[in-house]
Amino acid sequence: MKKNQVRNLTFGALVAALYVGLTFVSQVFGLASGAVQLRLSEALTILPVFCPAALPGLAVGCLLANWLTGCALWDVVFGTVATLIGAVGTRLLKTHKLLAVLPPIAANTVIVPLLLRYVYELPDAMWYLVLTVFLGELISCGVFGTLLRKLLEKTGLDKKLPG
Image 1 (cartoon, rainbow, N blue to C red):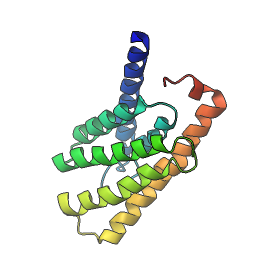
Image 2 (cartoon, one colour):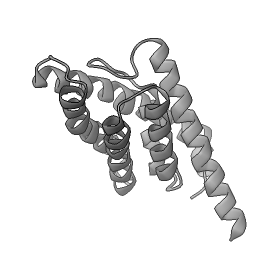
Image 3 (spheres, rainbow, N blue to C red):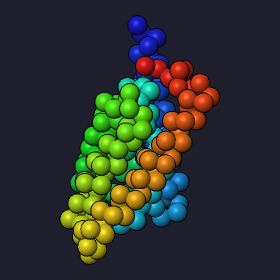
Image 4 (tube, rainbow, N blue to C red):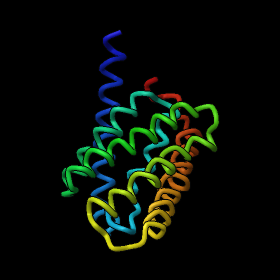
């Protein structure tokens, strides 16, 4: 029993570290935040399909990434909530692998534009913010997340994840 707990904790920590690292990669290209964003780290939201230990890892990773990249407090909190809601939705849809990418896309498309408009006071129209966040999430979660899922399945690594 203790071995599984350590394995789950280690995997969650690895997911958190990867999320932070990939967010920093996006930040180098100016895509980690703002009206137009493409967080490579959001591809990791597919991991709850395979492993529930990814859920706290994604939440902690998002919280740390938002904090370390200088996001406003409201963004640290509600950006993390958006990622967690999406990841939980992904876990709930684990048997519907094509649909499993939709919850993080939806959660971020609803929450992040509100943060951009009201916390960061971006003057862009709300429809524009919704569209740009949606497209970024569609690429990150929909395309890259699906590619990650297929890679894990093709290599058999999905069977080696805790869970």
